Image 1 (cartoon, rainbow, N blue to C red):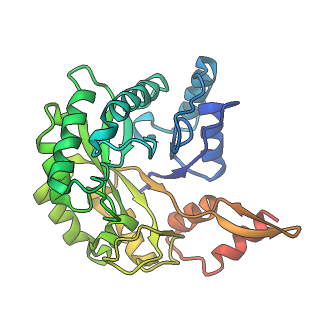
Image 2 (cartoon, rainbow, N blue to C red; image 1 turned 30 degrees about the vertical axis):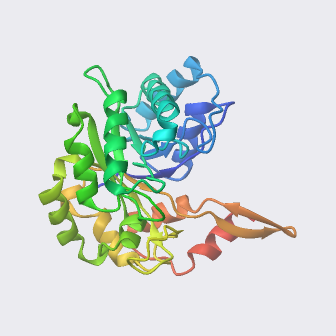
Image 3 (cartoon, helix red, strand yellow; image 1 turned 180 degrees about the horizontal axis):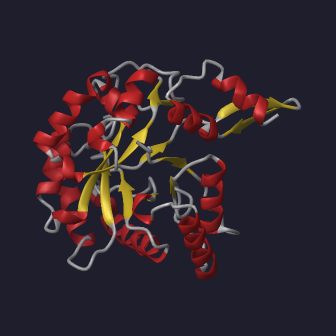
Length: 301
């Protein structure tokens, strides 16, 4: 089967969507994920319609399905914090308008951190906000991401995500994005992905699964730390991640790499470079490259 695999790519002011697609193609990807601006602030460039149309044409020429492309909502949105409610709701609405204008239909969202309110009140606040964001005319699906459970994060269990989804008025416009690093750090065993999928299907429903972030983890299972690692170089391991990627039940779901850039010493200066071209090649061949990091460093020298 042809795996639907891509990575996080940049979205720059000067070339916007067209540049994102070119970067994805340079990695050998057939999908990709991007932020429409910096994830940590509200600065946004006006979208350029000509660049959007050129980008969509380039996608079509390279058989990249718009339905498989993912946009990620910025980190500064925290729907679980009532003190930020107005900002989070309005900014998420604006991001979703940008996603629609760009021709995409899925946005991944971190559910939020309850900042001391407790999980139950945090979930109530998230559902309240999502019911302000989503209505019958909403065209962009929100994908709630599974979290590691760091600090006061909500969404580290399937039960918490189900509680949110069940209280959304238009729940058909909400899906889920699994993150392998986050799941590992939250306590789920990716070595037993068949059982994890069965649990997900029983609690939430496999039809709600729309995206998977593929990341290894620097941490042991259940440590709630959220530190991504390159494929095959972490505690989840290459074989377990290949089983996730090539599992028959998720074959049509886009997989997105968010693994760390590799540090290289370039002329006495430390620089970092994307690993995605090499990780995607490794995933397609299903053979671990024991020299992955060195190969990346040599390539970018």
